[in-house]
Image (cartoon, rainbow, N blue to C red; front, side, top):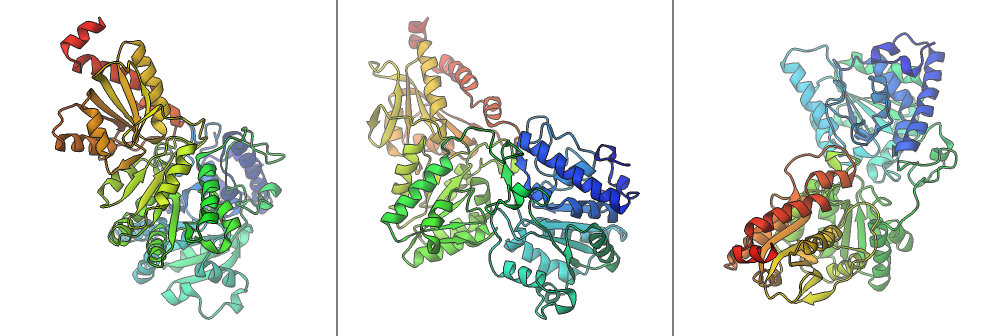
Length: 601
């Protein structure tokens, strides 16, 4: 009897009997629960695609046939069946990525972990196959977990239908993304799923577009899935196979988790489902609680989310004000433009998204919000390096991209107190977009200011008796604790350092230029790209003010970081305490005037 450990290639599945496939499905689920409970990861989505993945790999011949996953977090079973069964280091340095990874396997063609993209890849691949005369190759796009709510998916469907190329679209319809899928598309899917083949509604959206439609198919019946996939393959044209699956299937704790079906988890007890980590206040929770308070005080405050009500902290607001929260599905562009409409209607919308996903809506931030002077507040969760989820989820572009938006004001809180204060300040702005950004994880203790210099918070000042200090260290947001620790270490070496938190980092505060005039060297530390970030903006402001101070930007390199622990990545990139201290010590030693260096020796 073949076991999971015996599967080294999808072709090994071809010889299995129906009873053997059932046993293998159960073994895979046990493996998933055991592995993900130890490492954390996306559990619910993968429990729901076990049979679907087995059937796919029995009908299609990967990697000759291209199997694409949208979203990529539902690809764990695919990894197992393509020779990757060591999940001990899942989402950790040196271990498997939590998403498809070209570096891991020829069976992974695209590394998509932003939703609603795979159909566009499929359209392009099918066209390439036709032009190259590769008529026997098939392109399969598995789209699920709410990805069909994204507008880009429908742009692709429009083109796929017109092309008549052989693309098999596997709709993994589990009714959820992080939360229940919303909108007219979700309602239509539910209507299709509620009827048999002979009773299908005449207004089938896919058939009206010109696509063939098969289903609904029980997504946990391997024989039915294989029959549908085989028919789709033989059709030699675009076909939608509508598969109804249950998120978390086969694991009662996930099936009963009505919030998100144990969608994404840290390590947990597989018997109780309880987290193994001690609960700690997170940046997200601080934001969510403060927004409820603001909602109580201000009836004009409304909130928008792109299918991530719980992950971005809007669930408490939704519970308190259910008619003032709008979940638009995985549609960030629409969320931002809709927010501009809400602002035009004299409300103040708060758009809460992961920082990495704001990239998808930059045109709307520019042309629909900023151009119109709309009072919209963007709250960017998971800003900076997030680490475990890999390159696509690091929120490391926002401080650079948003520098180009006229009139936009950007706050980077250093602690929980500042999240609360700066969120309130942001909501007081009614004629321009505002942004509040913070990182992933526990928020930690507050970092009180020692003093104020104009509008700046002074967090540390070593050797305050000195008229002219050696270093002005500008801390951006959550880098404050690193900066104050580095200042203490540099002070022990005899350097006079001032650490300031500008709080609002765009536009550049004029007080920074005034303070810089009393320092030999200026350095900016930000959890963002060095290119075009706060350091670049301050350097330009200093030049325009006629100051010649060296202004050094310490941020992230222009690269896609591998999946790895956040602290490890920051240290490698020069933003950890040890690395930053060494760099600044070398700079100060070389830049200080000779007379000052002599007094230190």
